[in-house]
Length: 238
Image 1 (cartoon, rainbow, N blue to C red):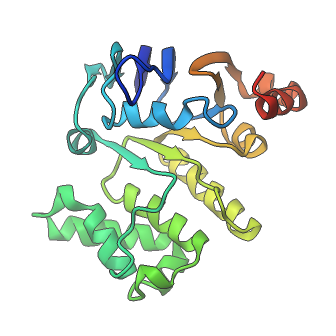
Image 2: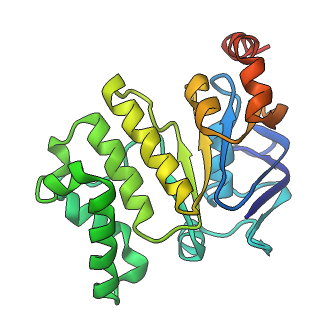
């Protein structure tokens, strides 16, 4: 589904945040990216989604080289991105935000309403608040809206950055349940997460990034066995 090969990228010329990073995501799998703050995890997602153009390396999506493609082009190709910071429009209703999320289907009203029905079945709390302005939603509800909005375009791959950041515990489990549900439906997930325990629990394969490089990678079982050691390493960044 996705192959990232030897990517080097950063925000300023000659200052690289990512150095020779490679990873892959198979169809319908959840792949986690963990590591300390400032390691380059979010930068990697932004590079894949076209906000940053890599100085070196390639990004292949479904056998097509998408290196340097713009975000709107990638959206049309089947990649959705859920940022760490909320990007919903606070003065629009839940349903208006969801419709905006389906902009690639702007000339297919029947399809938009079909997607809305499917989303409301998956996110019953959003269905109850469809006519409520987003500004009145809780942090957990806003995160649900972000994920639901990203799912409105029938993505093949979802890039999700820190899904549980700042959420009350009662919302955290629901957010991860929704992510797992998307995986069950065949959507591939590339997940950046500071919550190492949850990341290991939900992911089938993980990459640990430190100082812009992949330090460790392996299947879920490998990380489960070394969880305590990995958490300590992530906290101190060594």
